[in-house]
Amino acid sequence: MSYFNVTILGCASAAPTTRHNPSAQLVTYRRHNMLVDCGEGTQLQIRRYGISFARLDHIFISHLHGDHFLGLPGLLSTLALHNVEGDVTVHTFAEGIDLLRPFVNAVCRERSYKLHWNAVDPGAGSVVLDDGSLRVSAFPLYHRVPCVGYRFEEVNKRRHIDRASCDFYGVPHFLMDGLKDGADLVLPDGTVVPNERLTTAPTPPASYAYCSDTVMDKRVAEAVAGVSVLYHEATYGDEGEPKAAPRGHSTARQAAAIARQAGAGKLVLGHYSQSILDESMLVREAAEVFDGEVIAADEGLKIHLA
Ligand SMILES: [Zn+2]
Image 1 (cartoon, rainbow, N blue to C red):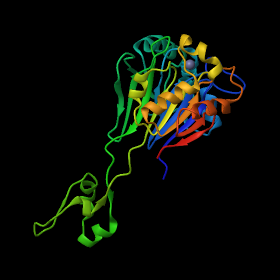
Image 2 (image 1 turned 60 degrees about the vertical axis):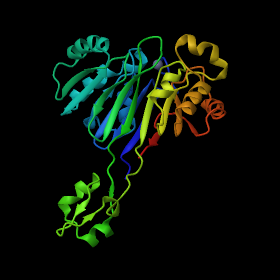
Image 3 (image 1 turned 120 degrees about the vertical axis):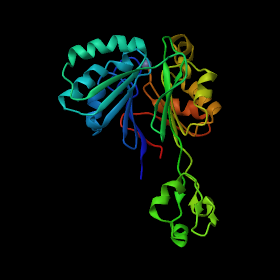
């Protein structure tokens, strides 16, 4: 059963266009519904793709350019109109909290849910969420203003029970949790049955990293080393290369170089400049550098991680 997915809600840079919405993605992991960036119109995209407002629990903002957070006040207001309950945590820089909290409090006075603000340090890597099986960390990106990427990774993956073997040894149900965590079985006569005889290895942990917006920088490749899927901004193609670094952005080819250095499994390109009318060209340029699969983000694209 699929329990770790990403849905692209917006992959434009700068301003909304008729082709693309500004940045937003939904990362789902088991009970978590996490929004990454919240450009203008994100709440409409949430509706369009049939995502439940009620289950949203974390919102991670990469930086304070409008195309990455202007949708937040409207979304938080709509959650109250829908009588959403529970906890919603917004992760952004202290500057973002100072900016957004009074505004949100003014436009959304009566909230049915508990809103929390978590200050993210833009200059240092930090864990922003850890529930024991999923860890989300922020890491610095290199843009014109402070900016972070987010890495989502499975941790503490448990071993799988080998039913036939457990039945053979008559393992009682209450010991199964311990076996999944690697414990050996001790029989009533004191015989120890090693864990490997009763379980099989866990499936490899899946991970996802979101990098928007940034110039090409090898520190980014280090921060996303080994991810299963890397979303990296590709604001421009080769012809826009002279504009990329001065504006704090990357080309598709540069995104691919980061994916290659990081040893990523797959690369998803996004955050397109309005001047890009054919994203397949970006995919072709990236594929010349990166051997893994290269995918062009598009609204509604769903990426399966596990
Ligand atoms: Zn941007």
